[in-house]
Amino acid sequence: MAAIYEYTGVVEKILPMQTFSSGFTKRDVVMTDDLDQQSRYPNHIAFTFKKDNTSVLEGVREGQRAKIRFAIDGREWTNPQGQVKYFTDLTGLKLEVLNSDGTSTEPVPVPAEPSGDFGDAGDIDDMPF
Image 1 (cartoon, rainbow, N blue to C red):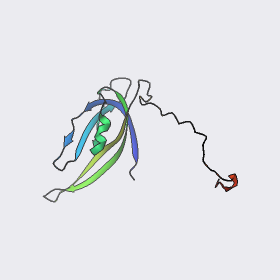
Image 2 (tube, rainbow, N blue to C red):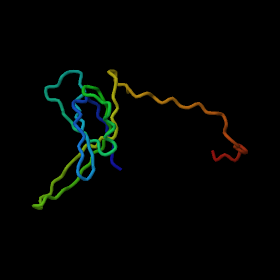
Image 3 (tube, rainbow, N blue to C red):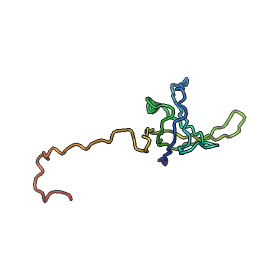
Image 4 (cartoon, one colour):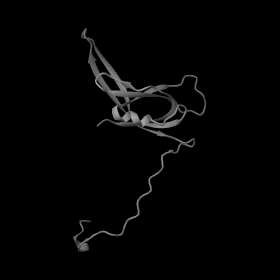
């Protein structure tokens, strides 16, 4: 299982969906540093959402603050001349748009009220805890 990381920044650019002949789809989002002041040398970090996960980017707009959850993926490739090359991807898993105070714009789920009907629980001494 790959480690999951988080990065908070500003959505700089959402690139168009790419579809390959195999049917594989991907879409990149470029994020920049989330600083209070303009940086002279900002980081431009591209995250790739793949396959069905590309739908995560629907409704996200450039300029929004966001927190992205991602995994680091790497692979090895040998070209026809026999030279080995290595590639690293930051694979996006989830993107959460943030309010200006850093809180999520996603509603917090409210737990359901217990119904009080627990069925035939039998003798309380039979409980495993």
